[in-house]
Image (cartoon, rainbow, N blue to C red):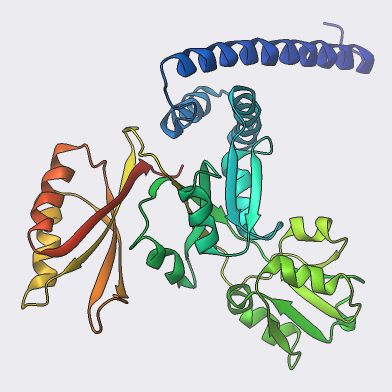
Length: 357
């Protein structure tokens, strides 16, 4: 059998690309029809559970050699662009641009959504509560540095619901104008990245002053005007602020993830693989911690997170943030929460939502 020439193979690629573009436009026409039907029946145009079903079906059906991670990224942008055809989707996040919150928001919503950076976590909540943004993205915990307490505190008084979670693998790069380690006399970053790179900094830049700033993007912006300083930030920050990578992946822990929550005014339908988050305060009495766990233990419900926080409205009282497997519409979950409520001063269901893939 005669081997195809390079020109013939390129022609085949061009033909396939033409077909892909044709199919993308066919998909877009169907999406627009779906949008018209939803509009006529007053249905939500964006359903996170439906997105998850699309990803799971495609990844399970993919025979290769095209990798699943790349396939998911491609469909992230296809879905993002198609949603933008149905209705503009505004998403607020803890800014500025080029922070890890920005990266997480792009990972979840793609580049076709209108991504709006805000200065604080309360500002993100307010933007969504007032209906100025359909969704908000806020950090809630890091695998090495723990919980983001400000986010948990906001849920006490907010009526917003959690509709999704995002797990972002965090890599920290050391950035500067020159790209040379020997030029660095000072390092800027947010306190968390500095803590996550402490050992590397001690080994490679001993005695160099470390300066805390509001965000990794702010650090990159400062360094863009200073040839003797460096920033710990993302690769995206390097491209945005015209910086060079001095060293990549300087985080001390290899498995460094930050979990983000997507907040909205609506609740999520059951997807089949869900997580529920609950906020509650219990009465101060003997055996109360055992009693609050018993409703879940006897029903075999897994608790993936328990976090306590001081209750700011009452001295020496605490609230608990709980993540559990299942949806609030599941009979066992509903029964467990009803039983828990009997020993609570208050209980608030923050949302049931698809578990991160």
